Image 1 (tube, rainbow, N blue to C red):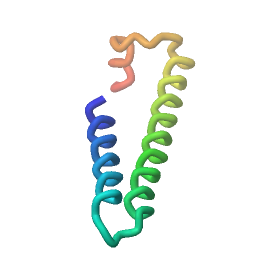
Image 2 (image 1 turned 60 degrees about the vertical axis):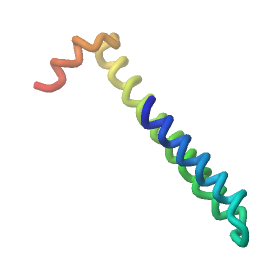
Image 3 (image 1 turned 135 degrees about the vertical axis):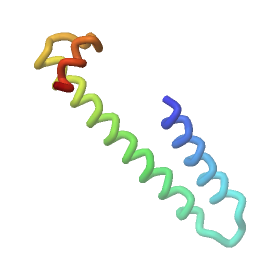
Length: 71
């Protein structure tokens, strides 16, 4: 959750930079947050796929059962 908040703060700073700095193209500050949001969405999809894979193999999301995966 903390990483997502920091990512969103960086995106907002890019967007505010593109609006306030004169002489820069407004797209420069908007492309970086768009790319960042796309990467975050892909990261969430990978995490969800890992969770589904563990659930299908163990049929449980109990975190105590995951300690056996270290061995």
